[in-house]
Length: 322
Image (cartoon, rainbow, N blue to C red; front, side):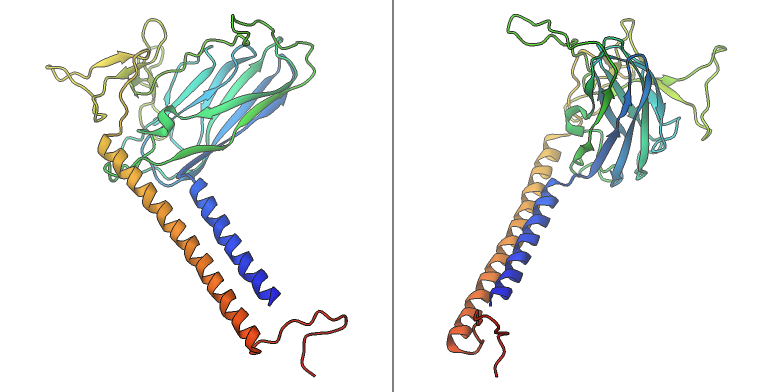
């Protein structure tokens, strides 16, 4: 009887664990691989797209402490072609924004693998220890990871399952102790770009000719204003690009937050879908637990009636009838 109870309890625990893991799963999953080095060294940090259910464009930020690390270069990976990757200018503001957009809107990209490689130089002022290099998603990925074959469907969920760090050794530097009026450590100003649809243009060489990638398409880069800020298209509440009377697309500075590209109807559908999904899983767990309880009750009654031999705990007994 005890063995039966143990089996039933194990089954219930397994079902519950599977349900919890289902709640935690996301549609698009990234990971990042860190590096090790000493002050003055050049190191590479790699970002991977590990799970991809099929999306249109992709945008994420890689943030770092610009006090200790200088971003020297970035290299596109294998998920998007070089012509689909709109290379953004390097900054000393502690972030890099990756943006890629396939030419065909209705053909989802399902590729996985290395998506971006960033090369950093470790500052002489960088102290020993693990320094985070984080992969973050503007607006939790809303508007950048979605089902391009059916825009009415909710946006996909996105996460970075393994963040990266640069581990620094052999440094004589110490952490800065400069604090503000509240006693908090003073960090570099956060100047990450706002969410929006970046304005891109063709990459040209010294002669003004367009640069073509290995796939035969023209390579692009993100447009910046005179202050070096990214330029975005202005969008309405439905996420559509705004045009003026002449049919030209309106642009805004990166300091102006663009509206989300998800409509209220899409958000409502997403919430309903999440509630339904959780309800089904909870109902399944309840059914398993109730079933286990019923089986235990039936077996207990049969044991009392003598239909099932009770366990003999006498030393040397093997619970078998003579």
